[in-house]
Image (cartoon, rainbow, N blue to C red; front, side, top):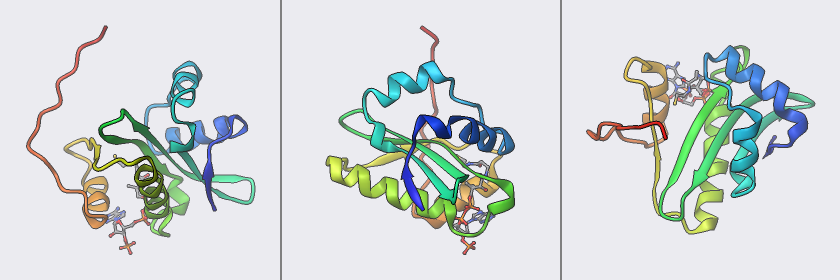
Length: 131
Ligand SMILES: CC(C)(COP(=O)(O)OP(=O)(O)OC[C@H]1O[C@@H](n2cnc3c(N)ncnc32)[C@H](O)[C@@H]1OP(=O)(O)O)[C@@H](O)C(=O)NCCC(=O)NCCS
């Protein structure tokens, strides 16, 4: 089942991110995010176990998908695809016309996954600066 994140999921979500070698979003960062668009942070649950997670953000112009991860023991069962489809539906409900995401260039499996769902690579280069 896909549902909105609850704080009681945090430890299990952090464990899925860790198992997938994804950076764990600290609680303080999540609190700020959840004050804006809590319905875009989704978990896939099986009973009381968290099998997957995805974090969406909406800036009023574009949607962004971050930190998608599935428990390594639960992969290739359609869990990530179900998470992303639910998130896309929630973006559409907000009037969001386009969704972006970043994939590390060496993440071949990740890139294949996104392409299977219709996400195409763009030539843009990410630029960033700490504030
Ligand atoms: C990428 C990831 C989220 C996919 O999760 P998943 O639940 O196994 O994906 P799904 O079962 O929904 O896969 C849907 C389709 O994507 C493609 N796909 C998924 N994983 C793939 C892989 N390792 N190699 C090639 N294609 C893959 C397939 O077309 C698959 O359909 P199929 O199983 O019928 O062939 C998961 O492997 C993961 O957590 N990886 C580590 C973190 C990561 O890379 N996150 C995304 C980067 S931004």
